[in-house]
Length: 89
Image 1 (tube, helix red, strand yellow):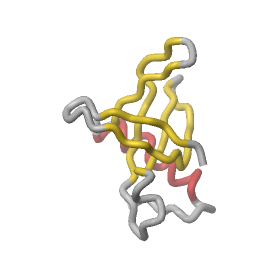
Image 2 (cartoon, rainbow, N blue to C red):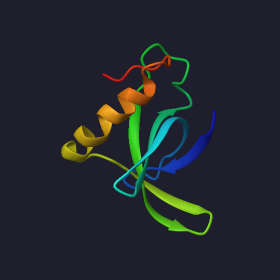
Image 3 (tube, rainbow, N blue to C red):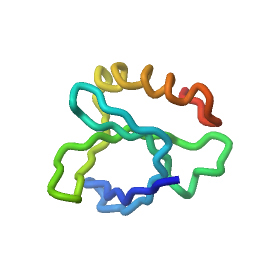
């Protein structure tokens, strides 16, 4: 499983996320991720992050917290996950 390092801007906390699914929508790259510490939990918290800047091989992601945007991408992630062990709630 691919992993990505993410730093929360507000707290400067560094987290390693496991990438559960990825997709492109409206020319934006989205990832569905879970903290690697929770990956084996029964109910891990999933986050949607999106690429906001690409500089060569470096990609800057931010959390998607806009409800309208989440409503747009969540059904697509649900489709991608239908046959996996992860369920979105």
